[in-house]
Amino acid sequence: MWWFSRKGPSGFSASSTAEEVTQGIDGTGLTAIVTGATSGIGIETARVLALRGVHVVMGIRNMEAGGEIKDSILRNNSTAKIDVMELDLSSMESVRKFALQFNSCSLPLNILVNNAGIMATPFKLSKDNIELQFATNHLETMKRTAIEQRKEGRIVNVSSRRHQLSYPEGIRFNKINDKSGYNSLSAYGQSKLASVLHANELARRLKEEGSEITANSLNPGVIATNLFRYHSFIDGFVGLLGKYVMKNVQQGAATTCYVALHPQVKGLTGCYFADCNLAEASSQSAYPELARKLWEYSSNLVQT
Image 1 (tube, rainbow, N blue to C red):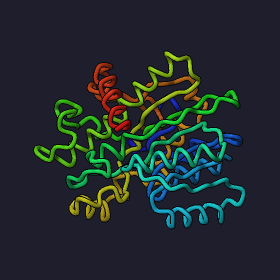
Image 2 (image 1 turned 180 degrees about the vertical axis):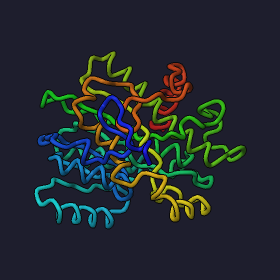
Image 3 (image 1 turned 90 degrees about the vertical axis):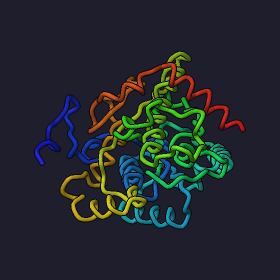
């Protein structure tokens, strides 16, 4: 597929892999939290960051699966620094417990990869009575990046091209928990639009404070993963033809690892990336008023 190989200004393309875009980068001394690291691009992101010397903390729901993944990474990279901590992003109680556990380890936090997500589920509320996709994909407690090392901290929100196809109003603030009018794909788009808006507003606030922390969002591309499990037809298509028209996991994790580690991204904040290059996000994501409203709305939900 020739279009996969067309390189952008960064020198990378849709066919670039996570290992390729981080080749030669030394992440020794850095600590990263990667959420959703027990499947798909989450595993590959954790593996490649660890390969580059980053101390990776996997925030995951399934501790048994997390332990197996940790063992697998260590078998192929005996010097890897990997920790597994329980984190269910659909539960604010779990988020708070995770934050306390992480803080008790006295580790710095240089990179936060908000990767965990689900796609197009049937209507369902989270443990906090928040529509599940909104809670899982967006309402994550952001931790202050340690600055003792005098290195730029990076917050990376994994969004999706689908953020361009949210509900007409963008974020349905008055109908987040309303089953009436719920559309699984639009709700997924809404959650991913929230990821972009959140990164943009966070970038603005951090910049105002003069913090050496950047916040960016990205589209990993269309990848053959289990995100499609709630749509049998699409899942079947992925199984049959996905490898011919979609990215593999190694390619899918490339943009995440690029934004998290690459020197080319230093100082860039409030940006949106695709195929390891700067890209244009939706017009809705560029509305500062919508981003500020989402921030306040989300803060209220987190505090309840």
